[in-house]
Length: 415
Image (cartoon, rainbow, N blue to C red):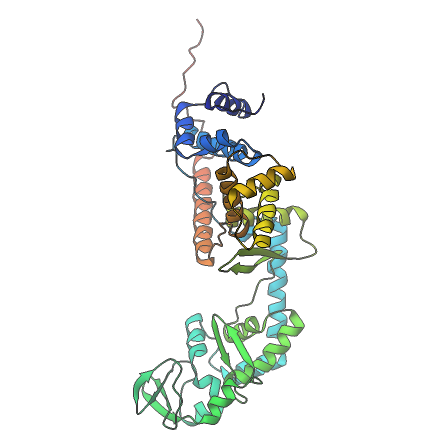
């Protein structure tokens, strides 16, 4: 069939593309209301017809399941172990656990834990409180023992004579004090300009962990942990933050078979988000492809169709002419020059050319991308795990029972 030019021809063309006898009236009505039919009739190029076919398939799929005709939900994040083979996930877990055992057996780690945390490893909440403590960044371990300050259960705040106590950064002056409070006591320590200058000096080591970024003064509690953390990170391919967190809590990082990291971001003049993959050499190509496809659906949703070559040529041509003319060229002139260039389908209406240019520019320079949060992924992971457990329990309960005949016609024996 030739390119459709009317709605009647377009409906027959669409039914043929969907391999059905005729298109349902509710689906066609929805396509008209959403503007897909008008775009395909007014300018029947590859992208408009492709969008029409894709939207029609989605609407028919929702209608066949008895759902209302509305936009489908974005795919939910899957648990990481669902995207790779069981053997690969098991290998990554066992390897990561063995690396953690090797780190635990290091002499410097055992001595540091015995000296700084004689009561044992910290809980998650205790480690977070310690990371928020400014005293652990400024003072050595002997300072806490001298004044009877517990290293874990204390709270710090700054104050001076000009303003009330504040947990945030102080406005440094000669009267700046650090208030350390813990259950059963408190202590006030004066802070000098030398402490402030040492903390903000470029040569001072920095530690970034759990969204906290701070300087580590020489001789402080965190400085004692920084040396083994740096050596662990270099030797075992951990980050310094992971090594510090392991020393505090004993929680080790997992070497995933396929790790995805986003790069780029959203700017005022463009959006560019890239997916950087770190793949173990023993991971299968099928697992890598599964992870890529799933992340692509999460980032792009149902809007992952490629731009047509016609519209890309148009956008490049118009952008170059606008740049050369300083923005003073009209759409009518651009239409005439485009038609003479013979780089694509000619335009009769300058408004159609402007519309295609703006749509392509929006999709090319500001693509609608999303990045799922870790919290949502964890929730979906728990939901999927609970669903699997319920299904397994149901199968166990019904195992051995005869198949149900509910809703089926019973066959009478012949006389």
